[in-house]
Length: 424
Length: 168
Image 1 (tube, chains in turn cyan, red):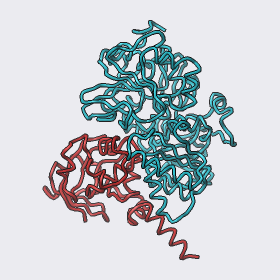
Image 2 (cartoon, rainbow over the protein chains, first blue to last red; image 1 turned 90 degrees about the vertical axis):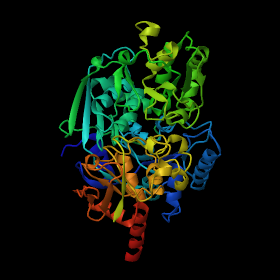
Image 3 (tube, helix red, strand yellow; image 1 turned 135 degrees about the vertical axis):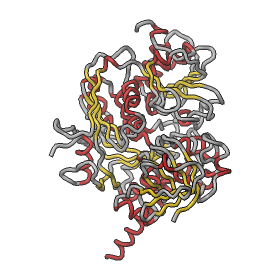
Image 4 (cartoon, rainbow over the protein chains, first blue to last red; image 1 turned 30 degrees about the vertical axis):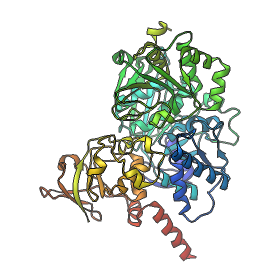
C-alpha cells in the first residue's frame, strides 16, 4: 500500500508493514528530549515509574536552554536537578553553559537527530527535526517520562496535509519563515491540528536547509503534529561530518493519500509579518509597514541559524539601529556564534549598535533577557506572538523573518528591506 | 459526577495565557496555581472557585508543550475543561496528568458565564443546570479511557507493569 513519509517512519518504528491514519500504534523512539522547563517535571515523573535507568543513555538529550544562563535561584534549581540527573544517568547528549545552544538548533548541528528518526521532545518545537526527514513531535513531561523509561511512545497515526510550492523565483528576501507564516495565515492556528504537514515541490528543494528547519519548526503554530520534508542532497550535505550513525531516508509514495493538498507559487508570496496576538494574523510587510517598534529580536529555534544572521548582517552592514530601538541578537548555538564571529557578522552587529547574546530561549517565551514593559512593541523572528509572550500582558509581539527584522531595527518601524538597502 | 459553575473562555486559548512563560521555571503545581490565567485576568486565581468548570471555544491549549498548563489548572481546582476540541499536546497532557477534559462541539454556544453545569464522566453526558439542556461529549478511544480510568499515564503504566509482574 502506498504511504506518506510520515506513515512510513511510523510504520518502520512500530514494526508494522503499513499504518493508516487514525490507527493507534506503539513506536520505538530514537531520541527523547527535554529542556530545563519540561525536564525537571519529566525527571520527577520518571522516578515514579519504578525503573532505575533510562531506556538508553545514548538516546536521551537534556538541553538547559530556556532559563539559562540561570536567570534566578528558581531557574538554577531546575537546571541543577536536570544536571544531576544527566550525570547520574550518564546521559550522552547533555551540554553545559558554554557548550549548550538552543535545543532545536543544537541537536541537528551535533548530528543527534537524523533522517528517518522517531523523536519525541518535551518542547512543542520538537517538530523542527522534520526538516531532516525525521518524524518529530512535541509532547508534555509525562509522555517524555514514559519515553525515558520505556523507549516507546503511543501515537495516533496522523492524516497528512501536503503543501506544494511551485517555482523557485522567490521575491527578494523571502525565506522559509515567510512561506510558513503565509501557510499559517491561510489555514489558521488550528488548520493542521492533529495532522502531519508535509512540505514539497521545487520551492522547497530550492530552500536552504536552514530555511527548511524554520518551516518545520512552526508546524505546531498551525496545530500540526509534525512538519516534514524528505531528505535530499542538501540534507545530505548538511549532515556530512555531523552524522555519526547510519540513517534511513524515507519519501512519500507518488500515490500516497492526503487529507488535503494545497499548492502555492513561490513568486506570489511576499514578505510576511504576523500581527498580535496569533501567528495566523499575517499580512504582507507592505500592509504592516510603519508600525513603530521598541525592540527587535533576531534569533530563537525558529531563526537563530547562520543563514538568518547573514541575512540580518547583509542589511545592517554599515548602518545604525534606530536610536529608539533595542536590537537583541541571539545566535542559536556556540558553533553559529563562532561562525558569525569568523565571518565578521558580530562586528557588523556591534557596529550597528545591537546587543549580541549567548544562546538562550530567554526572550522568546518571556523568560529573561529582553522582557517587554507595558505598552511596548517588539518585532521578533521567533514563533509566537500570544498575549504577554515576551513580557507584560499589554505588550505586543509581531513576527517576521530576519530581513524584515533587521530593516525594521534600522528604521524604527516595520519596514520592507528595500526601504533600507534599495532593491537588493 | 462533576458539578459546578461555568467560567467561559473564547477560542484559541493558548498555554501562555493559562500560565505565562515567566513562571515556567516553577514546577510546584500549587505555586503555579496562584498565577493561573494571570495575563488574561489578574484577579482570576483569587476569584475561581475550586470545583468549577471551564467552558471554552475551539483549540483550547494551543501553543507550548508546557505540562504546567494543565497541572496548574488542576491544582487551581478546575474540575473539568469542556471545549469543541483541544490542541493536540494539551489534550495528551491533560489526560496524562488526570485533568478531566471533554470534547463538546456545541460547548461555547450552550453555556453562559456562571451557569450551572453537571458532567457525568462515565457517560460523557453534559447538562446545563440553568436551562436543562443535555448534551453528549465525544467519547474517548478505549485506550485513552483506560489511562483516564487509572488516573493518568503514570498510574496506567504502573498498573500495567504490576500486572505484568503478576503474570510471571
